[in-house]
Image 1: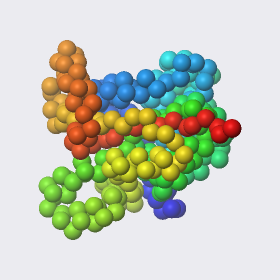
Image 2: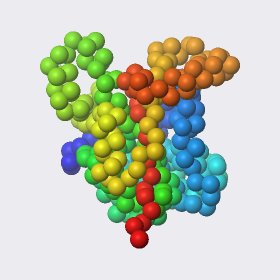
Image 3: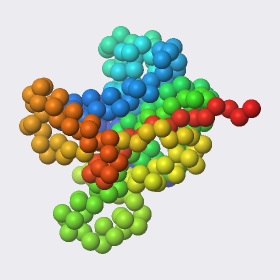
Image 4: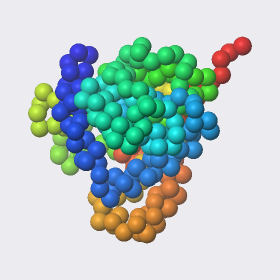
Length: 271
């Protein structure tokens, strides 16, 4: 676990200052609009309800909650990412409604139990944890009764093409056995393990964490990452989004999606 943490943290510390710039083009804007649309229907009606952005990175999603009026706690393994999230929140004048904590999802003892009405873990931070099931239990502990978690995970089946295109049959066989791959970085010392998931596995993991599954959505059915030029025009981008949302409603299309986004709720306390 120590080596996993150090490589993960080392990479994200290094890229913190330019992290959001890497994901700032027509495709990611389109992708983020879909993420937000799927997410916002689960937000608490009361903007005074506490929210937490887990694995916040530079805080893109937490800042959207701040802009919507929520008080947000930003949490990340990387100290540099936490500092960047703090800087960007201050830049928009919202730091007074934000808290910032450096913590591993494997140990969220710094967060109060039964507290947050809403949690999000966008960008697959649960899948980067040494033990995703244990990390999800930590998150569940922090949720208030009827609190909701929205999170994203890497879709296992969508990773198969990479190994096929590389002709790596032994590596593919190993990947299918374990569901684990590695974040590809130029520096081998920064490569860390990434856990991938199938829809049924996510449902089991949610249940074993004491949560109730509300929704599972794939992103994206359309392979627009390879067709970025078709997203430059705003009107055309909206048309592609409408098609995407229609396709995403069919569970049969989940296998096409690189990412799986789910919403889960913590039940009321038992009497």
